[in-house]
Image (cartoon, rainbow, N blue to C red; front, top):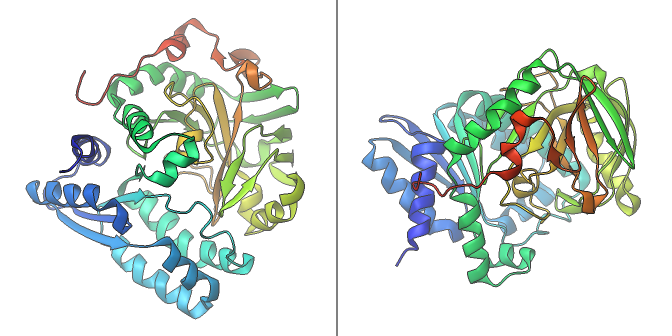
Length: 377
């Protein structure tokens, strides 16, 4: 018997996140372990007279392919999936973290080839600007281990976090969007960070279940050449199946000129040398989801934490585009809660967030919001 919460999640994806319409072509990319959700969404697509397609990828098989894949082979794979993606109206990615480090021993040159020859043309150039899309994490035993929970307890936490009233969340985030749209200069100050940049040329974007599940952030593109100063991230981040801690980035006129992360400094700089755009910022954002309270090294969760901010190196998002192009988009999270050392974010010298708490009266609802469950409004 299928968990009824899986059906609610499927309804949320089909009706809210992707708003699937009759005749639309829907690509679901996932793995076999996510079959209960995949089959439910497939059936819902048929009910709406949409056309579902499924592409299954298993991480252990992907590892074997990537470890020895040639440039010719990568180009063929890219052409193949570009053709598929170009014909889609909707893209749904459902990920099951079956082994968090399955791809950790992919040779660096293969990762660089993967991002430049496959991921950028298929996803950044086609999927992001041309489809309605959402990325979802599926509740698994490995995911539960990552949270240090029993499978049952984690599933309760997962569905409580994901099945949110995103329409209401969007309403609560609207005043923050309005402030970001009016601001020009941003300053981020913590005991280890002194960074500033401009955002006046661009408009912000509210994330309320239309891009990620779980969701909850407002992001904007910084002006590419405006970032100056130093930022130190106080949360671990998993990227290319490598755990990075205490990342320090020194910016000069928008570019990362120095990058450190202890024993992983070499890997950090290797990734930042993927292409010219990888050392420039594509996104600045506030996390706004109060149900996410700790870092789990899963960026879809971590970047949504209320009381945190994040900067993404690499490509900017089409919804707030500063023109930075790259094969990577790497979100790094800095938590401003007092127990993590505190911090301040200022817009044009006005204090917006202090120690993870929004200060202006018009943003106070973000601090005390209670997220209703999807369908219970």
